[in-house]
Length: 77
Length: 357
Image (cartoon, rainbow over all chains, first blue to last red; front, side, top):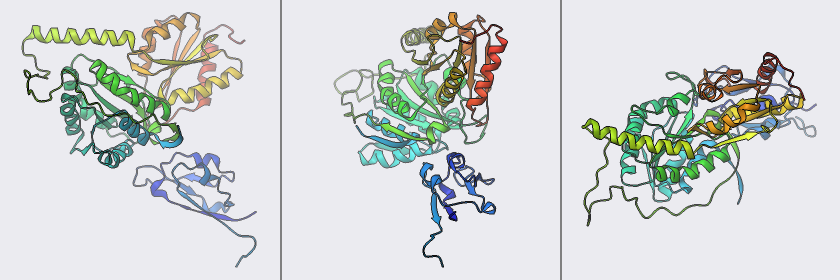
């Protein structure tokens, strides 16, 4: 399965948790710290290394916080 | 009409603009701030007034001043800011001057937090300031309903010369949903016949809430009370879901009513004949329609995001005919459908008789 990773603009996140529920790999968690808006923004649990870059989080996010990177099978390196 | 994705706070602001709001005075506070930010851009664009005041107290008194001139003015805030505004709200009520106010409720008491709450229910419905009065309190449960109620609110405020409060919560303010915006209305050109518009060619008018003579103040109060009674009799709004054959009833307002509706659907699938009653006006409370459902019921469950406030109004209506249970979450915790279902199951087992269809 493809490897992916996420760039999360945590300053825009309102901590609604839609992505956490939607993520098929269950690699998203609510953060412990508070952002400038006063919400606990979502985090990618990097230790799990299970993000496939499928982009479901970006689809459900109402606040456009995700940039999704997916490993390309063809031209690696 | 286009269906567009709008954030609750911004949708409320645009709906106010389209309803003919001429002036906005406010002060930022989460989770309401986007409403003010939107107005900061939108109102000057249309040549209308936007002013960020130095505090909520100043903001509401600016609204009071504008409203005295017959201007369609509004403000918005969240719970702690509404507390600060109470002095002005009482003056507005005492002078019978119309205005619209949005409260995007957050967890309290005190600074609390910025998570959604319904804990201003008492504060808003039981007068919102000192002295004898009630604002008209509208509680939308979707962004579309927030838009529709906002669009109607200035007509209600000016029609009754009353304070209209739109009571949402942090969820409604922050949530994005598809909305159909109503058309842009032309601004009112005629000012009401009580407005302070400069006394050129006519005798001066006075707007005041000060009556030093006791008998005179009582007369003013009695006139206000008579109007409130008329509002209570004619302005009750509500929505019901699956109540026709219901043995049990869930009562909830705003965001919580949507969660309760999911629970009611699930309980129906499990064979419990349950319905949902959702007050749209929190004052006047829709007592008559709720009372009319009571004779068929075996039990009532009230769900709120507070320590049990609306449940007191429900108990007043139900008058111990059937058990009334309460499920509440405080501090910004949102009740989940499965919890509501579990409470319903408890209610069914406690009410003693088999209630399965």
